[in-house]
Length: 186
Image 1 (cartoon, rainbow, N blue to C red):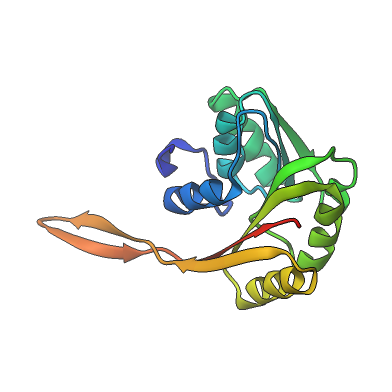
Image 2: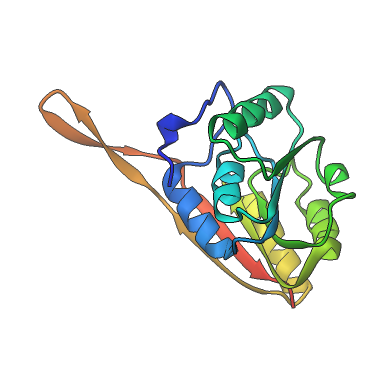
């Protein structure tokens, strides 16, 4: 995994290293996977997914212009050529995607149900969706969607606390808790 400090960040939220590791493990990518990263932010998951799916393709869908520029810069910095950036709001930016092996949702802009509806049509049978949610509403919406559509799913919350050196002491510094919801299309 790439250290957080290695990514060009600006003022755009970024999925932290530990959460990226768990998210990508739950996505179960192969070297030839076709993946979409919805709400790609800085592109940290996009870059890491592209490094795993070297013979595949990763689509980064992001609506914010500053974030799209950061994704471009991070893709260039880490020399991943198998990334296509789509500067659009989801679900509109998902409509022309090919059949997918996996989808990762890091931001939904309040459109979780609509995004999942489109991804449901794009994802292969047995394909995986991983939703990273920091709000109860996104978590509840994703769980209800997967339950209603009879998807196999599991969810867990992670709370990462890193040690931060302050003079002669080490102090815990908590990161935001994140719900990780992983589902497999039946």
